[in-house]
Image (tube, rainbow, N blue to C red; front, side):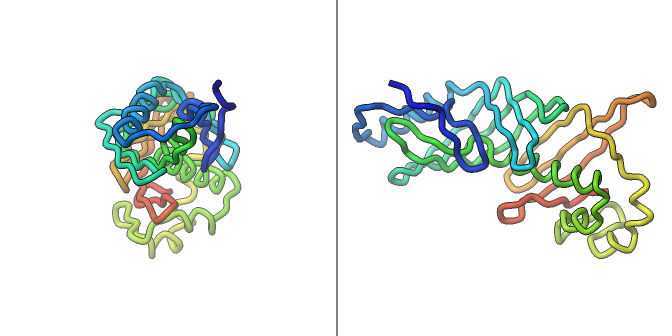
Length: 218
């Protein structure tokens, strides 16, 4: 009998990975790893609503070069992930490295499936909300300590804010491409309009649990 889909940290729908059974039995480490690999290979779609209300939908989600370490009822998974889909109204392409911490439940494992991607997307959503509300404090708070964009470092962001602000793209992107390499990410935003296609590139880095901008914030 299959249990109802569960939700994990960050609201990730886990019905795609969690398999539960009425008759639980301990699995040997080799069996547990094989079961988890099979679960990951079976995943192809993911739907999630981020804390700010933005919808993420992934198709053709694939995990490759999977390395699994079992620690009791916790599985640590290192893998390369790739997917296409949408984030809000924008199309999305994603490739990146993911570190999953999954917890044993019944004969399966539950937990967030693409935490690096969702972390980067949450940072993009915070930036867009700050731009929409013209919240200068919130925007500057998104800058990493080592921020640098050309000749502008973090210390010069505030003094130059009035000069840089008129050039900020306020429209929602039509498409975005995200690439994560461990603790760093590169994001390309594409905008379509009467003036044709234009792009804006951002760089982010992981700051403990949050992602902050190391370039391209304004």
